[in-house]
Length: 607
Image 1: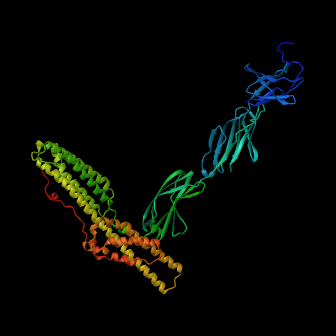
Image 2: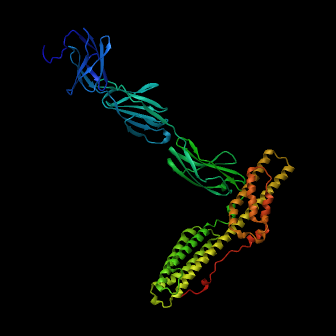
Image 3: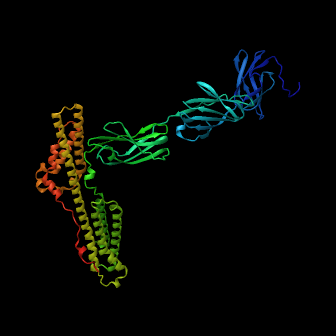
């Protein structure tokens, strides 16, 4: 026998390889290969498989007895190898197993063509998986890239025929899909070189992303309220959508009528995913009537035409335009008052740090330092007044604001600035400057600031009186009109036939106006009255049931009763008694506009 010759050894036993069949050839790399042999002859001894790999390593693998003289084992084809089966002295020849990898997908190129209504350019996505989420109606160009040349590629769907892909190159294949519903698929590949398929493919998913309705939020107004028929409502909101807002609008309805739309979208508006909404809504064009219920909301429409709405705000229309009759808000005066109080506090702090009270016994240098510090504070306060309190003064009290500003300026000039200028040029050039005169000027300045605060408080009280009186007159006219309307309804019911529905509508409109009247009285006038206790006449304070506060408290109670009980009787005559309080009206009408007058303003300037 020739040494090293690959032949079997003859013995009393015979070994036949049943699997693989044929016993050698090309196999997929990484697969498990079943080896099965049949051993015949005398009583078999253990059967083993001798394996030799290309890296010159070797191993012996025992075969498991299956019965009926058959034995088997499995081996993973990690690389090329040779094998033979041995049992006792019987041996087969070596068989050669060659391996080659199965094809697999290494990358996906996904070109997303969006539905026309989105007006978006195609987007290319390259990933190592085939999952994707798209809007309904999109078209997907799917390109599969394999790790080796392949001769056939298919997309296998569970419940529909496979999609055949078009060959771009030996490793790149492409197809186009119209996405109308969710899909799952696997990719089937067949290698060009060895004919192996990919055997196993992950399950990929194409998911439809539903187009959501726009999200719209109304930030301001925050609450339902009562407004006049000529108000301008400031509206602030925001909207967002997953693909983009195409247009947005303000919608309103009057007394449960169909919704009306006011477009807010600018002419050259480009769709946006997030946007802010601001609008000043002038109600004067709506021809609203007293007692009407006005509802409003914001609406946003996305590119597909889906609409989203904000929360609804409801406004009750007052029978009067209170903002047109009542004296304007005195916020600028209050700002000025607070600035003066802060200035006075800083002046006191400066003087305390310098020794509590300026004295003629202080040195001229010490007094000069105090004057410079107070001058700086004076200039800063004037700048704050110009920038804050005098930005948009109302014409009715603009003159008062200017007088107060000029007074603080004049006080700073006469008592501080002149002395500071002369001190800066050198005390020796101004022998008339004496420490007692400088100390007196500082004390006079401090006193003037304190008196100016009191005068400003007088201005505030006066304009509060005017606000209260203007509101009382306005509400009195409305109450008289309301009472007259109720009388006309009673007369009409007695003389003509009127349907029950028409009667309910007329009475409900008056009830709404009455509730609105009480709310205006409580919301706008009672806070003013509580801040001005001197409005109450001393003679009326002894009569508890005759004071204005008593009437307003009763009206608050009646407002609650009206809200709980929507049917008349209306408390119109009770309110008329409040408006007819002559002593109270006399106190309001005799208030005089205050003036500012300091003695030092008429005296010659010092020095």
